[in-house]
Length: 477
RNA sequence: GGCGACGUAGCCAAGUGGUAAGGCAGAGGUCUGCAAAACCUCCAUCCCCAGUUCGAUUCUGGGCGUCGCCUCCA
Image 1 (tube, rainbow, N blue to C red):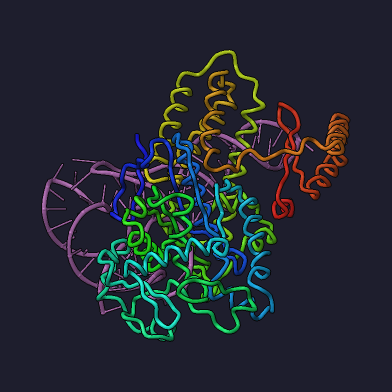
Image 2 (image 1 turned 90 degrees about the vertical axis):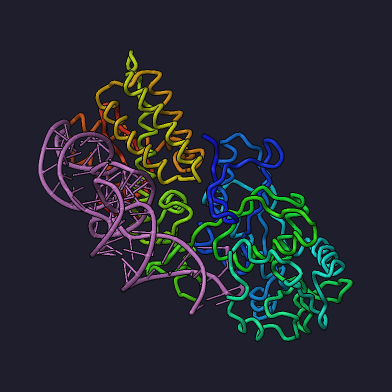
């Protein structure tokens, strides 16, 4: 089955085929580094990660660009209050973004262009738009002339007549030809120089509007036409609509062939997570509360399909952590199993079925939750087979391959085990001696001590195993 | 006001015109020195009403509810 993706442009699932055979050009809207990313932002970023991972699983080479918005009104505001340049103000948050992404095991994109390092590209594009009369200068500001782009609204399917007029007028100081014309360039304000937020341009000193950076930087790294452009649903209008207008008016080429939009993460009250709504949770908040970042990862990409709303809750996070634990437990058990002499034919058939089904689920618009469900079903069957000693060498290999398939997207199973610390090993041996002497009091004390230090012991007929556990898990006895 | 989405067990959630995956939580078992892990069993007729159909949770219409976008926003 071929890969099918839901294209916002057409509102339908379409078979995906990149322009250049075997190579996918993908642009995704990255963070505005004015603050820590909240979990809702991270959901979108991990969605991009899922897309690129599955493209790679599908055999494509991927060139993925994710921008860093390091200049916008919020940043200007905050930098001014902090008495810093925007570059200084933004730096720790940009670093935090990469830390978060690493903690969540997002694969790195090929390029992370910051807006402020691509001002010339933006100026060029704005100049072109002015030449083509798709843009006009109004007292130092430059606006895009929406009337010059009849296709405007094709992505969000918004009828311009139905747009609520008025709200925008108040924020723009100067006359625009039309209320929905948007800013490409904003004239430098007195304070901007001190903030390091003003650049020269043929149409006057100033700073870029928000939308132009994506058009200019995607062109710089990926060319005029993208195979995939992704972002959160809230960017569909006006941001992505404006990108299309700018790029297509400037380049006279289709801007993006497939548009992917991920749904919002809701907070505990069921409303979209955002600063203003009050529910604003960062990854740091969650890890401080004892949550494993990889459980957060699992929750964000595997708990619900990317196009449905997802609600953050302690219960859901706990469920995700349990699922991760269960998968690790299984992978671990499989790895340490000595295969039976013969393979189980029925089991082999089921494994093959599940692997195929998993692939189909991902090919069907990245339905990871469905794929994961199939695998869990088989994990139970496989555990039973393991209990019964019915797992042969081929069975073992194919189930390990299934885990590899799964972890190609999830990437939460294979933890980098630091190796048995000598002390843990010594304590386990000590406890084993105590157990042989039937000194269970001493044996339990050792186990409890280790548990308090984040190491859980499990006795089985194959010997004692240990694993790291989270602080919250350690608290339970 | 315009456009759109969603409403499946205590919670999260997948899905199909033919009587509903999976996970968490819960109950009872097996195993175990005790645990843990694992396994077994139990736990829903899919918001309401009407229609189409041999048959609808899945299609159509209406209603109720929740949410999103229309303004900065992943």
